[in-house]
Image (cartoon, rainbow, N blue to C red; front, top):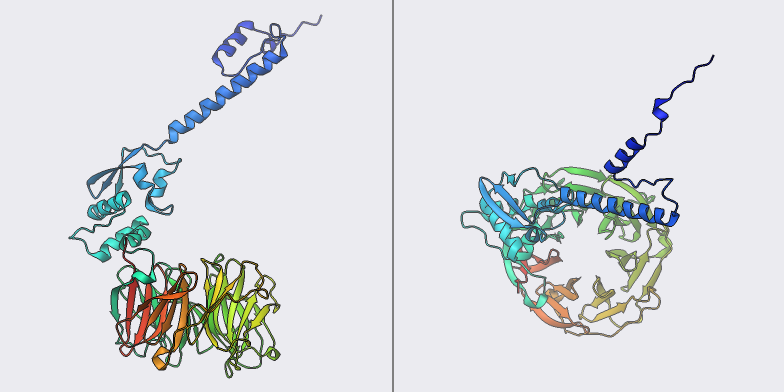
Length: 491
């Protein structure tokens, strides 16, 4: 006789089911009592919403940052609010404290730094005013600001946005002990500068314009151009057909390339440099023949890998002259090359690196009775400015995105210039103003008509070169070799 087998785990226990239903958060449905399926769905949806609200509340309560934070800096207690710390940059030391994932197990945060500097920096975030303690040097205070990532707030507190009509001389730096006369000056984006004296590179910081130890190249080498890649590294082109990446802090040579991609039986040199405004790993260098200076093309260099990646070249039959300057035009997403021809006219080339070919559009200005010698890109107005020796300014509106259909607006100003010291050296556009440099003065042109609104006479000999960066205007003088730093005071 076969005996029945008992399955205790499958036995239906109403008491056990009721206990589970009362202790659980889930919505249980009685198949006997629940016959209204619409009510069943509403009951399930309501239970799901309750669980979601409870889960969000639990996450917020576990990761909520208190409104007031307490710091123990070098044994001294500071207390501040999240509103004050929110004024810091997203890359600063305090940005992590405002993150939703921040969960401190202690009531106070210990920082092993100087308490005097911390109190001054905390007050800078509160009020925007800078008050350095008397017992602290400016260099030490700047290093503390670098630790907390507040160097941008520090620079904004000591100088305003550059305005050519409200300039004041803030620093006067002598470099008379250099081996040769200075010929190139380049400003960094944060207000530092780099100067070339023949084969010597000198760098100055952005806070107190203090010089670092010079970097010397080979004796028979000469620097043609300098380009800031970041706050520590610059690219240089030299007379020995080299393109190199230098670390200005350590003085080390990171990469050096002596030959390009453009193949030619004649030796090539690289002079002008320009960086892509959106992609920091693309640097453009103009290639030309060493004996005649005729431009051959543009090569694209990757400073992070230290390699020349591609080139855009044209044949010798095109007959273009030397490349004066290279500019990356962000609103057109192309490279602009300003070229001087042997005949005296000026050519604008727009080059698209994505095509990786020599297909470009150009325009010659043979119909103008004057000779244009300099050009600059106005990023604020999406225009290109050209200037002749008499400081006639011609503006090209590029809103239609086509070079061939640009039209000359008008000659904005005409200043009679004569003599060697009045020869135009370079022009720069910055914050809607045009800065024209001669051997003796710096002219500031403003307004829609680009009229001269100010003239700056620097202290020193003849002006060799100027550069603008970090809301500072730098002027390099010869005989004696000095650097004038111009700023606009805070309002």
